[in-house]
Each structure stands twice: as structure tokens, then as C-alpha cells.
Length: 278
Image (tube, rainbow, N blue to C red):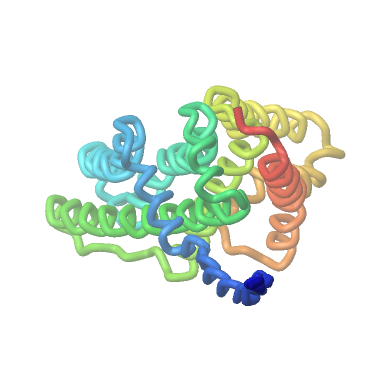
């Protein structure tokens, strides 16, 4: 008897098509808000011991200048204009140095590598620095105005005279503008040189040597005397402190700041955006 065994051929089952996994949601990285950048740049102004005392010197110099006027100025000179002039002169030296150090400290203290890594687009960092620089300049002027007003009241009480408030809102606005331009010139030297020592030396050459040279040339050369207001930016800015600005004076201020401030600032900003940070 023959037994027939049928062997069933097993056909491998076709695997079901794998369902593609849903893509993971993209991580949204939001840019750092400008308000935070401004806050960080403002904090940098006070973080170091040198920065703290440089900022504190604004108030210290204002108090010392006010005390000097009260002690040594004649009674006829005790007025708001005298106090404003006495405070404004040292501040016109300190404020531009604050502006240039806000940029050069990134390179001299080697914090630029960290700053530009966290915020790769350097233009936002420079914008924050400009905002902080302008804010400090304006705030310093209001501090100086307040200290001068207190000095005017004290000086008038000591001399037995009535306080004289002979600084108008327009004159105060011109003083603020002059100091803001000075801070921007300091910031321009910072972005051009990116070295604290070189920028400070450059500033003193600009503020002391250059005006003396151009003033001497104007005194001995009559042809340059009429040309000086159009080429000497210090001469044009100084008018903001003590003169009523005419249309011609504003034009001269615009031309000189274009040559000595805005064009060099644009060149320096381009260099900062493209230069390698070491």
C-alpha cells in the first residue's frame, strides 16, 4: 500500500508596507530680543571695576565741578549757565571715552568671541551698543543738569542772591546734541581701531591736537579762516555749547559731521561686520 504524502509548499508571507514615521517637529529658535541685548550691553558698562568707576566719574566730576564754582567763582557768575559750562567741559572728555570703550573692550578683553558666537549677526550687537551709548549720553546730561541746578540753588543761598536760571530748553537740547555727537565720534574711533589704547590716543589727537593745528592755521592764514567752520568738526560742535545756531551753522555742522563722523562710522561698521575676531 503506497502512502502518498503531499508536501505543502509554504509561500513566505509578504511583509506589510512600513508606515513612514511622522517627521519630528522642527525646533523653532527665536532670535534674542533687542531689549535683552541692550540690557546686556548696559550691564557690560558696569561689570568691570574700570567700567564702574568710569561711569561713576560722570557723577563725581559733576559734583566736583559744581563745588569748584561755588568756592571760587565770583558772585556775579553764580548762575545756571556757569554751572552747566563747568560740568560740561570734563564730561565732553569722559563721554566719548565711554563710547569708544564700549566697542574696544570686546577685543581687548577677548569677549568678542563669546558675544559674536551667541549673536552671530554682529549688526544687532553694534545696534545695541549704539542705543546704550546714546542713552548714557542723554542720561548723563540730565544728571549734570540736576547737579548744576542744586549747585545753583546752594551758591545763590550762600551769596544771598536770587537763583538765575539762564539756560533755556533749546540751549540744553544743543548741549545734549553736542555731547551725543562726541560719544558717537568716540564710538567711531572704537569701530575703526578696535583697540582701547589706539582709540584713546586717536581721540586725544582728534580733540586736542587737531583743533589746535586747525586753529593756528586759521589764525595765520586768512584764506583758511573762512574755510575752518566747514572742515573743523570740533569748531562746528563747540558752537552748540555757547551760540545761537543759524541756518549756516547747522549746514556747517552737517558737512563736518558727514566727513568726520558718518563716513568713518560707516567704514568702521563695515570693518567690524567683516573682520575676523581674534
